[in-house]
Image (cartoon, rainbow, N blue to C red; front, top):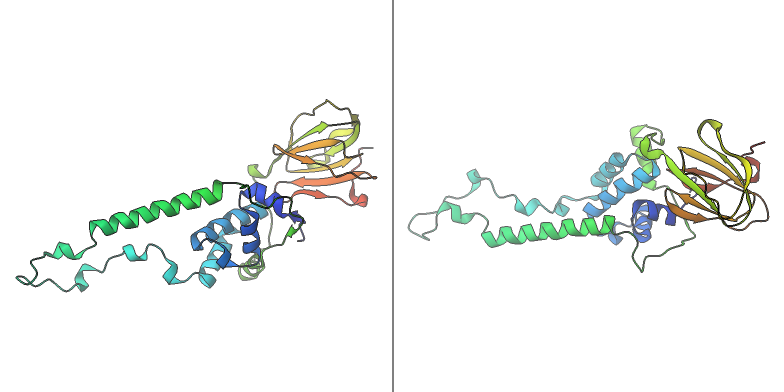
Length: 257
């Protein structure tokens, strides 16, 4: 909530459906397919928000995952030393006949393949035709993250890595004033009027700040087109990999004068 991140932006970045993101936020584990999916979603969501995914998954496992949910437990057979040896001459079966049958092992293997296929489908499937888009609500910082911060004593911070670099291109649809500031206060577009039909180079930075004279421009953030809402005043944004595109107040708009 403090980051003012829209659910649709996180959905596009993580490829996790908005309904599952809301279930994670509200800790409604029953709305998610199962513990394996919860842990995978937690890691992906935490990475998008710049949190410690390993700590979130470990806390979920300790607080919400039960031993009965371990799916591979039935595959473990009873130790050989605890089995009662077969009695010769009564059933005619050897000691090896008491182990799992071939049909049982085939069934367990088929279940494992189905589970892996479902995980891949849900994580990489992207938006479906019935997934909600354009949601006006904002993503709230997961309550588990706050508890994880208290438990580990590590302040939340965004990890600076090559993956934190944002790519930005501007394509005017009409005459528009642009002031674009990159890392270290470098003026990438020093307050000039761009004309329709032009296209700027693709700029790369860990953080952009931009002032637009009007909404006559399409912003391509990491290749994703973003329109600008009409406004009677100058429009400003802060753009980062972790938080996406965030509006700036009038007092914080960058100037190139």
